[in-house]
Amino acid sequence: MAALAIMGLLPEGMRAEGRIGLDGLNLLDLPERELCRIRGKRIGMIFQEPMTALNPLMTIGDQVAEVLRIHEGLDRKTALLRARDRLDRVGLTAPRFPLTLYPHELSGGQRQRVAIALAIALRPELLIADEPTTALDVTTQAKILDLLKELVRDEGMALLLITHDLAVVAGVADRVAVMQHGVIVEEGPTEQVFRQQLHPYTRALFAASTHQPRLVLPSDQPRPLLQVEGAVREYPLPRRGLTGRRDSLRAVDGVSFHIDAGESVGLVGESGCGKSTLTRAILGLDRLQGGRILLEGQEIRAGHAMPPNLRARMQVVFQDPFGSFDPRWTVEQLVAEPFHLTGRPRDWREQVAEALFEVGIAGDAMRRHIHEFSGGQRQRIAIARALIIKPRLIVLDEAVSALDVRVRAQVLDLLAQLRVSHGLSYLFISHDLSVVRRITDRVMIMEKGRIVESGPTHAVLETPEHPYTASLLAATPQIPDGWSVHEQVNGVALSFPEP
Image 1 (cartoon, helix red, strand yellow):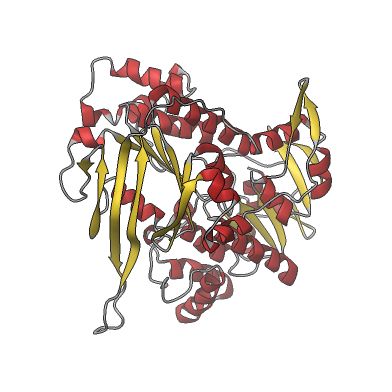
Image 2 (cartoon, rainbow, N blue to C red):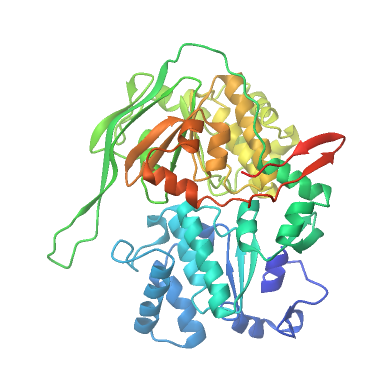
């Protein structure tokens, strides 16, 4: 909200008071016409959710070029050439990413890079970055953070970075301000704030960032639940010229693995490595050109009618819960939606209320709409929807990446509890290695469509054998050694070790 006030983009009915100074100019005194000249040119903003920030009807080239055409009066051809340079700068290089692509043809991380290219197109004096690396894998995140630091250093650009990742703050920010309930509760040089943690809320954030869910599982004999055998998925690439050859991209290249009943398995890799493609195949949404996928011995075949009872054994929690819900429906309708697979029972409302109660949402939420909830509450409702028909496997696609550290700790605790109480298995897809370390038994590392390393989570992440795994760990932001404290919170001694 503070960032939107700076941009002059507060929601209708809200107004800002006080003073917002940009190089001596009070932005609150300016008419809308003047603010339009400043937005994009002197102040750029990277929004957290690129799919809603980008225009789905415009190509990525035209969207980046639009800023250049509006503020610098360039013709379309020249603007597209400059747009090509900006997209190359954020890692979306030609010919793999032509200017003619639309946002829906890119992964979440790739869309975020388009949003960053758009924001830095004119090298603004102030860049507001609202969770700019939330959807990015660790290596891409490292490149983007290096790019932002380089722009600040070389262009004299000021950066306001909004994030819940304390390690990112440690590596980027000169100063840090901690905000709670709309008030700055602690502020100062980054190292000083990290070492002292004078305010209880600051200490609570550090405690949540290293929170480890407690999990006690029954010692049953492992039974295969999901089996992926030699999965292959290819996509045709754009034709080279009018009569040129059409190549193909092998997004999933002979992948094989299994998940046992009651097991939690992580899938980690860079944006574009094939994680989402593999997930869609597992969910029966994408055809395979080779191999097969079995759920409890029954084959999942995309493009063929899947028996409702088979589909009901597997549910998914998406990265963006708001985008996966129909905003016109009430919460009780949203949570009850999977009943179309099993038949709606007479006591469906009671079952919805029970599912919401299990995830910590009060019963009075049933008549409300999804826009009335916070991000963490929406994610809990998404989990309730996945639970309602009692599946055997839940696919969690970056399910906690957009949550702040305290809410993320609560959701991880919830997932651990539900895994025990419901006998669930998880396929946990994430780029956050610290989260994968805390919630999974085994982890698979995926690179260019292949599983290059797999094994017990702690063994793989502590002593990696493959160079790619080592590169992921090396790119993971870390709070520097020595920036840890031991504090007394509510009479309990808490330790905040480095990651």
